[in-house]
Length: 130
Image (cartoon, rainbow, N blue to C red; front, side, top):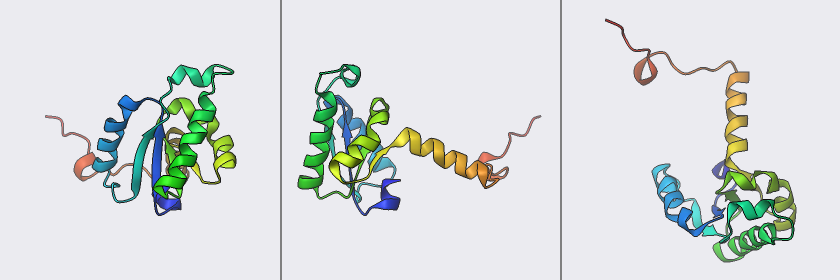
């Protein structure tokens, strides 16, 4: 989704230990040339739900650093626990902030709405029963 609406993006996730896994996924998807950097706000996921924890602000600040330092045009959230922050973060940072779970769900809805289904030949063909 980020590569459809921008020429470059960074990913902001919660925990530092997620960074190498996300980097590997981006490489596997063939998007390394578009991804500027994978960053961590260094916060526990549950802190996002705690009022006064400052977790939301840390995510916002990391996105602002990504825009400034990485020269990215969009940011992908690397944790589904941040899904409810996308609208606020987009307003706060001035760049599109994307939640992958929401986008993936809407993309499937669009495919279904177009009447598209998986192919029944080749790799997705039903197994032949003996």
